[in-house]
Image 1 (cartoon, rainbow, N blue to C red):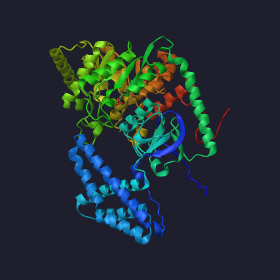
Image 2: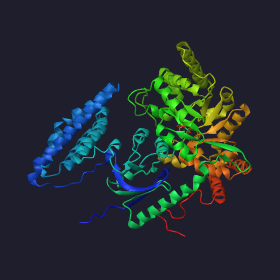
Image 3: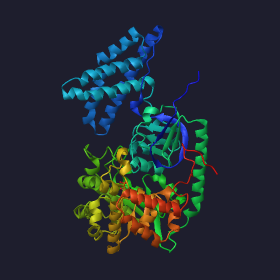
Length: 600
Ligand code: PEP
Ligand code: MG
């Protein structure tokens, strides 16, 4: 019998370009929806054995989790696992499921699902808050047993063995960092925004991705054929023949567009009036070093070192820091490497660094605040960077500085580390440039005062926009308000650039805005002369720069900054860029994934 699979088209936020087609691989644990089936009376015992095997497997997994907690000094959370282990022995779950299989000839998956449902209902009706809260535990445990019953539990990202498209409710940066780029051809998620670190990593790894789809895990099933269009944000589940052909044509156009940009790779970026713009790369993982030359990066403007902590069993030592930074600095030498000190928090979590769950992690003990709190962990890194600085091309910058007091505390720690290295007779460079990221509005407003104590500034627009506009950068529901061209954001950027000019120190932009061709002219016009971005964007940004004059960019920026709304600025800038660079913003032409074809 031919099974007709549901066809679906969803639109989300395109966060990593590229167009791929492949089979879905569901990693979302909440996805199991058992079907009601009746079994042959002769297979009752087999079905019950299958259920007990799933219970046993669940027990083993829970014991493994408990062991993992203990090994990673998280033993105090073991009680969470104990609750599940106790429930696993609950006679009601075991007995009632067995009864439904034996007496009603229901398949075990369906029987278990029904039983868990009933238990949950009982708990939800209780007055006691503690017991009401146990509903979640029941749901999680039920999911686990069900996954083992249907064999889904094994679907972890690290277990992927063939080409797939990952489908998940949400992916953390740690999940993304684990992806094998040779096998994971793309991914799509229900949650997420363009500047979430999951999205940033996807671009760094070159994996096409669409996030914020809201319900992709509801409509896609493991094994479905899926088209991920990381340019338009369109995701097509079980596409028709025609859609598949269109996908291949769009893919070819996409490659063609990038081939045409290759001529810009080896050229420096300079405007038509000969003003040089330095274009550097952001990196997260050491694997990315191999790409830098390929895309024509003029150094590394942002090395996000938190990925040395994420997915690790133990904290990096001073020596490991030193060895890593030397390796990266030598790989880009004689060009510059800007190492950003540890920026954990928000959507980046490392189990080895003590971090309490917080109500508002983006506004909590994160980034430099966390480092000033966990001084010993921070000092290991500072000493590693100081030691590596002897190679000569290293700069260091602090993230999320919100004021002078915080900066002074961080600088004092650097002095403390130098004194400790002196005492040990270990060499370091005394004049390694030190800068700060401007990503909190307060820092932009007092950039003059910060600049006096620093050698450079780097604007982190991802967070600057988040904090200036009060938009959680990882929340897909407010993604429509995340507008880099908001006049308030432009003013904060301009203030920072001017403060740098007055202090005679360079100012760069290293947020995602720097790598988006729509914003290049505005940034140029605001006086930015250094940009740092994910490497694959470098050729297109060089192309934009080399066809513009600083004069026209200035006029554009002046007009934009004087407008009242983000929508107005966006429309104006987009129209300008479309007219000046035909085809730049939609290189794949009119053939939108679900629109009418207009091939010429
Ligand atoms: C930024 O906030 O713009 C930035 C570059 O840092 P991150 O994205 O790592 O927070
Ligand atoms: Mg930031």
